[in-house]
Image (cartoon, rainbow, N blue to C red):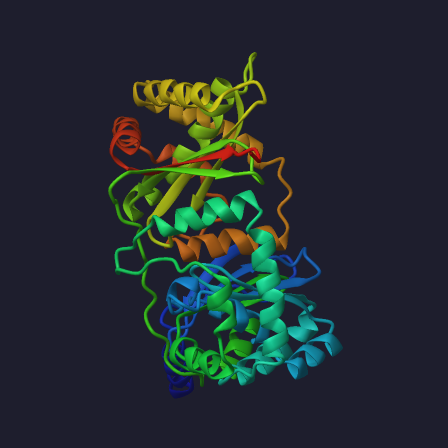
Amino acid sequence: MIKKIACVTLVLSQLFISNFSALADRKDAEAKIVRCTLKNGIEVALYCDFKMEEIVVGVVFHVGRIDAPVDQAAMTGVISDNIISTKLHEQFQDLGIHYKTYADDFSTQIVASMHLESLEDFFSLLSKSLSGISVENLDAYKKQMVAEYKLHSYCYDDVTGNHIRANVRFSDGNTLPISTEQSISSIRESDVKLFYKNNFINCPVTIIVSGAVGHKSLRKMLRNSFSYLPTRRVRTYREPQKIEFRDILIENKYMGNSITHGYVLSAEEKLKFGTTLDYILQHEMQKFFCGVYPVCNFRIGTSVGNGGCLKLISMYPKQDISLKALNDSYGAFVRKMSTMEVTSDSLNKIAERENTAINFISMDLRDMYNIILDAFMNNRNVNYLYSIADDIKAVNAKEFRAFVEKMFRQNSIFKITTKFKRDS
């Protein structure tokens, strides 16, 4: 009996670097997040909740546009749309599996929803299809991408997005490629197959499962489907680097007036202060710009980074507000933020308000998938469900105050101004 136990223990320890929690497959099991790493390096996270009827699964390949050749920025887009073959698509349909594929700057994803009885077949069919890729109707696909590219040239987010991408450099020396009509048209099937072979076959992979499946059942499925796949490369994190500040003006008859500021945050700054910064910026900008006399609408975003990040603050002036007036108002806001008093008590009050608000938010499985994915992409702890209040409470008020002043005074790398241009 002792020998049998030792044998089982050895097998499990070889399969997992860190085991799942020993939670039984019970209907009343507490909903929680647990994670492990398979022996071949595939990362796994499970949000187990038997109150849900369906299961959401994400398979994340940590290969994105930043890994594509400079002259073929659309490569990962081609792969994401062809990684599920026609045959596999039909098999998924027969099993009642609904899925979407995505490609962004740092990852390529397959996100699927299904019932428990289809989960094992999903893993089995998918794992067998990952050894290669076939590209169907590439010429028609490229024509569609070129048409979409031309359409996007009239969109604010895409035009400014390309200028943002052109002005970011990363710690590993890479830059974010920008799609052009030529770069799309030049892609050949042999290029796609070679890129997939060199970048996807042993790339870092994260599997995220949320829903009504227990740890024991999932462990068995993963062992049967993924343990034989090649050893994965170690995932790296890329931080945007500080560069010389650039003041960029875009005049375009298809876009309105706006100002976007970009600030670089290191991985340490993002993990330590990112949550608190987002909350306070949102609150303070709402008071400053949208009060009794509204000056502008605004948007705060985090972009282009899976280690550190780029914090984007975009402002869209009201019709009677000039760009100069908006620029002057933002300068006054920066001075206010740079001298703002921050105390432990004020941070604790913010955390308590956030903690109260989270109780009124209904979380579904896709929300949980996105929370876990964000944690993996940014090397955060995913062993608890809601981190916002805890993150804010953990911040040292004096250090946060110094960080805010440094961000506004030293970490700015560009200002992009868009200006409506009338036809002459």
